[in-house]
Image (cartoon, rainbow over all chains, first blue to last red; front, side, top):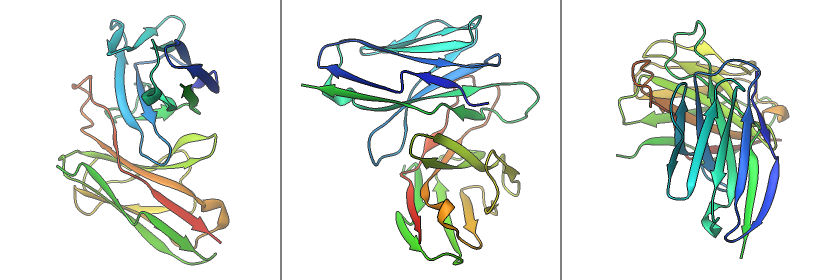
Length: 114
Length: 116
């Protein structure tokens, strides 16, 4: 079942912060975050693992709340280059044999204005 | 390393025509995937492969066939194209190792397909 992302879209001014949420109705093994620029392929940002810690690089970080079955992506002091659509990909390791089959959310469109 | 490549980049078909999309990866990945992306729908899995010679259905497999004759290539076929198959198609690959907890999927640049 597809994870639900919120908000669907957000507009920021340069330097502002944003939070994007990804919620699942099933227990998660991991959450993968991607960013996609218009007309380009999704680019991997980071993985959050079950039992893992909050991750981050540069001014983008993420957390994983196993109990709430959700992950949040935090963009701090946003830059123009952060504009794009952010997707979460959720991994459920029930009885499948695949290493990392992902189910993607519908995406959050982020626009950063000067 | 070219990563994941896809050909063609663009294609226009008429209803009923057939075509094959080619995906190639040079990372020695075991797993390969085909997705379609429609506006506001995110990425939906069409078919995937967990190794050379294997294929399996994803979420939206109807109207598509796939083949994985070589480890580095994954082909997506449309036997009789329909306007509902107008979309952007992405190929992805991953190591597919459960032991590698940080394994993720790497995407190709996409193929924009229009069916008239």
